[in-house]
Length: 286
Image (cartoon, rainbow, N blue to C red; front, side, top):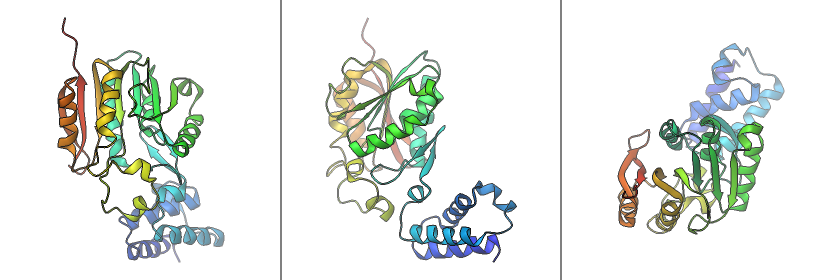
């Protein structure tokens, strides 16, 4: 069989298993096995018996709905590559919008202080530290398993970047979790899915529940976290919170109720769905 035929056969297997992007996943798994990028597969004439056997085993695993990122063991997020696997939330492409938004916000801020709440694998914290020269980034995470992945990913970055990241084991609902820290930017991808929501197998079976669910209304972490944000964010500083596509209004109302924020606005993800709320900490009256 040609490489193309092998890939198409795998895509058919994944499609039958209900995988959302069978062609893409088959291509990425094949590229992983042969040690090439997806675009370089056109230069691969054939697979060895060992490569074919390994590829089909990986396809079998993906057909059970094991996440592609777990099988490959890594995911590209922003400017960094992260290791991911059991025990940590797999970063999604739409969250990269928070990274790019944060980079733009900080473009004119010298030596900014950044806080990433519910950091998980460190996706936002590490990509912002890597992308924003001179930034000092505080990453807060409560789950010991996720902290292991975060610290592992941090260890892979160049020393000058590692020196600008501080990892905190703590609860973002505790207003004192970052006592003494004053930030120019806060980003957060907290647990926000309302309990009882029907989820794809890749999420329901593999992402830790602690990173997914935010109570009946999806706000059990976000609402108390706003007090932490109000304490840590400097006047004029910016914040963005990712949320469920049904709870944007609740997040905006929670920020508005605190009376510490202005310029509260809704941002959409790549699919045009309400996904992030941004705001500024109100400046002090002269």
